[in-house]
Length: 320
Image (cartoon, rainbow, N blue to C red; front, side, top):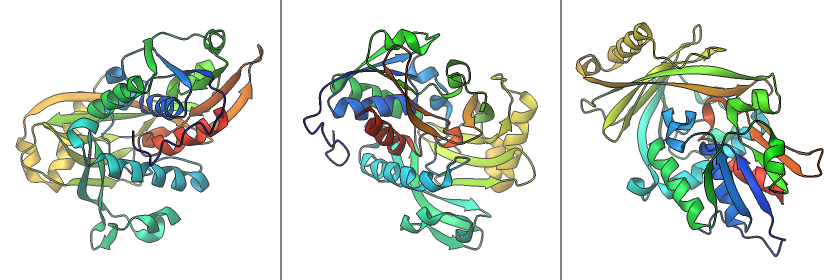
């Protein structure tokens, strides 16, 4: 693992940690902890390939995520890491790809945008070269690196954090939407995203455009072996079943930007529930009744991969 982000334990006492949740936040947090010398297990109800993270597009960009004062640093930390990983795209799933955020302007972005050397304002919006992550590949890489660092991933459904606390002194909550019931935190809610996968008709750049007056978004991401079309951002919708009408609308919107998409063969449909939280990301530690510690890392909304490493390091700092 690169020394650019594995900073060691500094002589700290090794402890047992169980990370609950096996998506991109859980695996990245577990990997950081393992690299810092902790004995780490990930408890996940489902394989990484079946998590919400695996459905994501996934373009690096601080999208629908708060708190604004912290997101910039978390995102930039993850950006530098992804830039490093892009040198091994077949292994890590990370590539640097050019594209346009249509209708966006530099003045509307936070101070973090000044750190993006490839971000340029053009007539149609913001043009940039950004990390585009093939999530199934990336999740597999994270899991392999975690195991290589001495960690373990176990299939386990958790009903209470007390179950994990009975086996480890520190429990890390990376449960995404599951935090609504497990914490419990009623401010956690789904933001439904539907995607259409088509054969790529030769498109090499990504494109995004948000509709300010609806929950519809228009984007396409060229991934290996497919073009990912989107999408939707439907708050409080728990349905994971693809809607045929919505799929047709997604294809039509994308085809208005690139007409060749209308003739592309559909090869699949995906739905993911982004784990949003009313108060934004929660990274916080608390004591459990039995004396153990529970460290929270959830509420990433539609930007989990964008802040994955930054939030993982902030969480690991609380673990100690």
